[in-house]
Length: 412
Image (cartoon, rainbow, N blue to C red; front, side, top):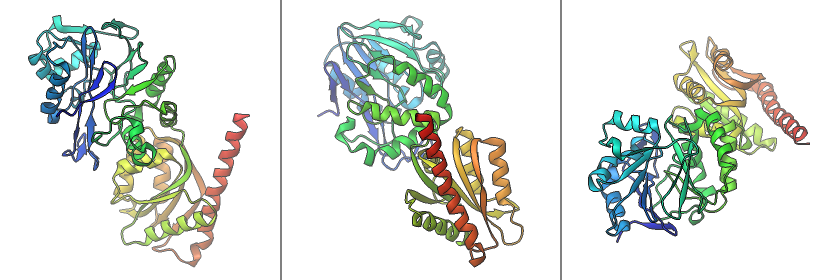
């Protein structure tokens, strides 16, 4: 029994899953695991698309051998040299010494840096617009620099309309037998992981992703085979639309994320009070997160999803609470932009955090519109703050109305 699935005529999935890894890239929590995708084409020539992480190399090699069923491996295409997709290159070369490796020029450079043993006579360098025929399947190669490494290429099977998309259109989460997007409830069970994967790993490189999306729009895509997560054979336009929003930093939804930093619960109570005030006004697409116990990758993902962000923080050492500062630094690092922000500040004696958060955003973040209304707490929320809290809630609702009106006018 082998963990192999047929993708389409001549094409087979030979990758696998990793449920043991707790942190992807040793930073992002993956409680549902992750898949390492690889595909094998049986044409006049046999072609293996990408490798896998070393952690599942044994299963991967077994799958490849089973699908080849005695045939030699003629080609191996490496779209992306990150170790989770290139970990078993040397094993493939050892087992199939006549294999030709296809990759970008910089891809081969990184192979040499890592120390893989690929001979010059085995190497085929491809660049933008190059094509290779493996029989009845002809492949077009596209360069995709900084999505999310500089050496990345994509390949497009002109015969079947299949795009091999490297890390683009991928997701956290192990497949566990369910290979295709229409075998799962993607919007319910996978979209959050797909968003968290994109926004934290590729999110900084929106303009480069836009370039790739423009290239992809010039070909008729009937299937997408990414290096992580499900293979897309239905609703492709829906998922591409998500990528357009993420790449252009346009919110997916009108809604509010309230991120709070609270030491003893007083700032948390104020955050919950604002959430209640917003819901009373009919805006129920509200989520509230404690920056001290929510992984920053989730905060980044939700910031990409929603139109409005509220930062509620206690003053700490006359500055920004460290966990809140970490979140702001990540927003800057990932080039997040085009959001409306409201502030709640707290300080028992010297309340400086609101100004410091606003100064940081002014200096380091692009197109962050900070509302004039602000709630300032002196230790805890009380009746004296009631008008300020209502004014802040009203201001958020009003800003949503103005953004809608602008979008409606631009669509006319």
